[in-house]
Length: 272
Ligand SMILES: Cc1cc2nc3c(=O)[nH]c(=O)nc-3n(C[C@H](O)[C@H](O)[C@H](O)COP(=O)(O)OP(=O)(O)OC[C@H]3O[C@@H](n4cnc5c(N)ncnc54)[C@H](O)[C@@H]3O)c2cc1C
Image 1 (cartoon, rainbow, N blue to C red):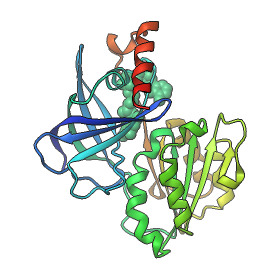
Image 2: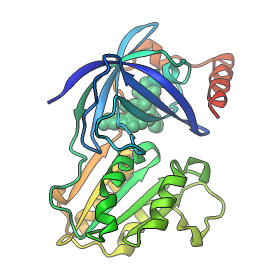
Image 3: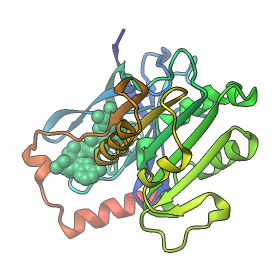
Image 4: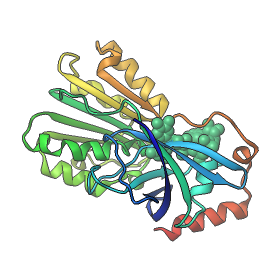
C-alpha cells in the first residue's frame, strides 16, 4: 500500500558531469519500505508552487530493509523544473514522498537468465535489484546480463560497484555500451554502440529468459520491438519508461540565462 511521508535532503554528491546523488531522510524517524525496482512520487516546492516528479530509489550499500532514507540518482535536464530546483538547492530542503509504485520488480520465480537493460539513470532501480540478486548469483541459481547504455565513460554510473559485482560473480555478464565514447575497451566489457544492438548476440530464449528494461522511452520501444520479433511477450519483458512531465508551466519552459547556467554549473562542481 502506498503512503506519503515528509522527507528532508541530508546529503548530496556528484556522480558524473550531469548526475547528482541525493539522500532524502524521513522526518518522522520511520522506515521506508519498498521492493527493489519500485519508484516513489516526490512533491517539491519551488517559487511557482508544488510539483511532482517520479524517482526510483537507488539504495544499494545497505539494501532496502529497515532504512530511514531514499537515495536518488538524478540527471540534469536543461530547463527542467525539478532539475533547476534540485541542482540548485542545499541540504535541508524538504519534500514529500509517496509510494512505492511500479511493476519493475523481480519475478517471484527467477528465470534461468535475467537481462537488465538500462540507459543513463535507468540504472537506479537495478542497483537495489542487483543487491537483492547477490545471494542467487553467489549460488549460481541464475545468470544475470546487464546491458548498460551511457554516452561516455564519465556517465558509467556506479562503475566501481558494478565492476565489483562483475569480478565477484561468474554468472554475471556486463556490457557497457557507449554512444559517444571515442574508443571502447573490449577487455573491459565495453562496446561502442547502443544496448539494442547487443541483445541478439545473446540468443535470448522466450522459454527461459526474462527482460527488465528501464530508462529512455525510445530504447525501451526499440528493445521491446526486437524482443517481440524473437517471440517474447509483454509478460516476459517488464518495462519502465522514464517519461517526463507533460504539463509545461511557465517555470519549466523558462530559458536559463548565462548567469543561471553558470550558477548551476558551480553547484554541480561543488559536489564533485
Ligand atoms: C517511474 C519513473 C521513474 C523515474 N526515475 C528517475 C530517476 O531515478 N532519476 C532521474 O533522473 N529521472 C527519473 N525519472 C524522470 C523524472 O521523473 C523527471 O522527469 C526528470 O528528473 C526530469 O524532470 P525535470 O522537472 O527536470 O524536467 P521536466 O520539467 O519534466 O522537463 C522539461 C522538458 O525537458 C524534456 N525532458 C525531460 N527530461 C528529458 C530527457 N532526459 N531528455 C530529453 N528531454 C527531456 C521534457 O519533455 C520537457 O519538455 C523517472 C520517471 C518515471 C516516470
